[in-house]
Length: 176
Ligand SMILES: [Cu+2]
Image 1 (spheres, helix red, strand yellow):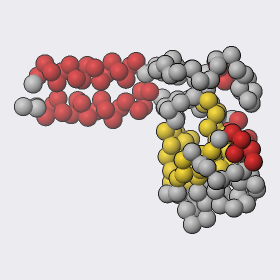
Image 2 (cartoon, helix red, strand yellow):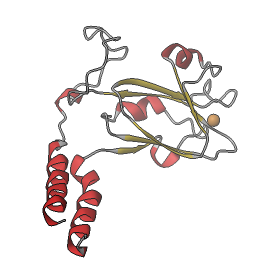
Image 3 (cartoon, helix red, strand yellow):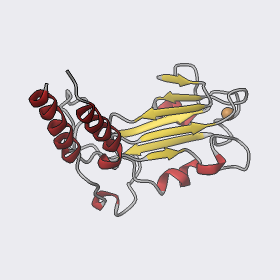
Image 4 (spheres, helix red, strand yellow):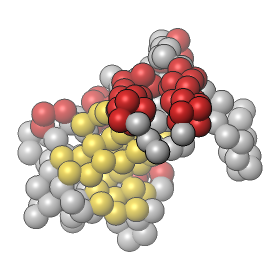
């Protein structure tokens, strides 16, 4: 049987984990949110961030007036909303970034993308990702140059989280 102490320890470990990993949460447009009001410069907003795999991108907006579509690069450039990769409509959409590279988002409401409601989230690959078939040649240059200094930014490593969870699981095994 579980003792109450062990359960508490496990709970603490699980809840402490996100803080340990240092994964970031980014609200697109910050306090302005995802909107056509005020001519928010989403390119400038994204340029000041250093997105990484494991980060969460959040879109805040009124779902009566906007939505979020992930699209290809060419559809991003032409504001083509006919074949979105994914569509989000809740008004409070959290998107966990699980792969590096450019992630293109726009609002699918007619005219909004054309008026600037589009954002290119460029995720810099840092930790070695589980190997995927190389459909992207590693030598191909990024479409947009990364802001200087982006490559030198470091964060606490995920292994500490793994260690904590491992210890927690070990304790369960020992005390059961
Ligand atoms: Cu919109």
